[in-house]
Amino acid sequence: MIVRKAAILAAISTIALAGAAAASPGEIASTPRVFGGGSGLPGYSGPAVRPGDAQFERARHVQRFDGIEAALPLYERAVAAGSARAMTALGDAYSNGDGVPRDRRRGLEYFYDAAVLGDAPAMLALARAFRIGDGVERDPELARYWLVRAAETGYRPAMEVRRRLATR
Image 1 (cartoon, rainbow, N blue to C red):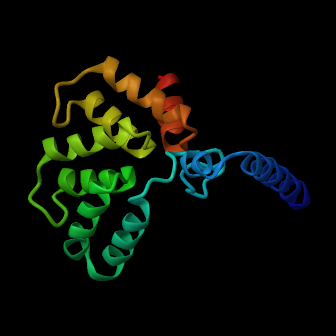
Image 2 (cartoon, rainbow, N blue to C red):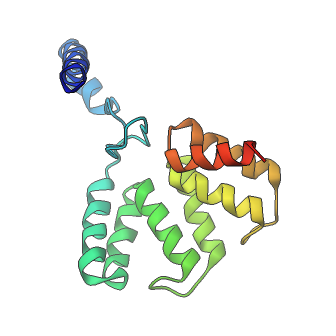
């Protein structure tokens, strides 16, 4: 199994390198990454790597060791640079009142911005909000829309929620 997986990854890398060799430098810079968001989750491509994602990783590291209050300015910078993952982190912070005054509406705005950029956890958060009417008017159609979009990315928690709701 490990040998087969290594062979598949080698073949993908060879194809990507062959395509890069035929492309101009400008085309390479604008081409999305082969494995998407780099989440490490099998089957989850996630959003493409964005410029603010390195800043997001730094903010997450600071949060882990120094707390959310120290990380908030770093998350804000990552959002300004276009990181959907940072938008989702701030959506969580505002929705839960973690390090900031609780502002469910502002949290949902961050979730929406991240979902539009393709962040599956943000899509799932929107689906939940519309399903139960948390911070927005209850809307089963919008809840279904965001849940399906999140599940279609291969994001396992969304796939599980979708499966559970389908069996009811």
